[in-house]
Length: 275
Image 1 (cartoon, rainbow, N blue to C red):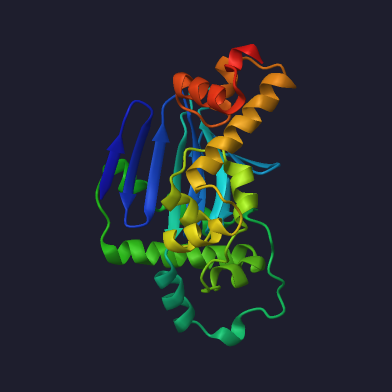
Image 2 (image 1 turned 60 degrees about the horizontal axis):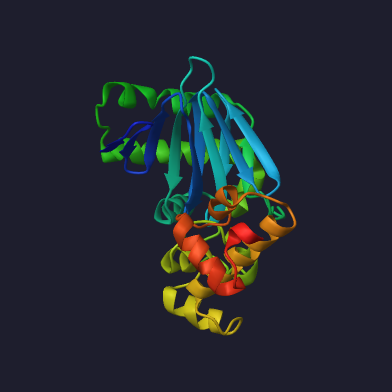
């Protein structure tokens, strides 16, 4: 068992099953995992933002999030009800083992692979009983055995398959993730605080492959490309959108106003306050 606490968060983990509790302040985070995740909300509210699509979860709601996908999450309290939710993470070895033991002739055929990244699931007895059976372990801090955790993950797979047949080809796709277009990814995520290893992983590459592929699209090193992109977007926001410097520098991904001002003047010849 692992427990992490700070002013706003308590997270307890049991080998792939996570309980998260947040204070009345709530929390905003970027979700990105190399494995599929099943999320269930006990209390509060969770908003999952996937590009222009928003999925809102309230107490009793459940959602499936595909692996290798990056999105934003907002976890908030509602009135006196603090945020509390449980997540199940499905490692590929667990899914492979499950697949090897089922009768594959019973798997529905001719299911088109959906391009959806987040599925809000309908409430079923299988979903409800799975998550209600997990609460005693988190309420009492009594650690379940590895065998029980494994059984709960298997129960989660059965609950998913009975909930939506579109999840069959997603859960049992064991191919390595496709490479994501680098420019598209960077143009969509330039403002996020990511290092090169994280960008490589999120675009389905090793670090060496990422660096090699990046040379094909830019003469600049990746970090300098990011700074240039952030400064260009800052210029647009200052010049055309008439935003204030204090609002813009963090919005485009800088964490330090002094660093932003120095980089901006170096690129444009004037400080950002003169735009």
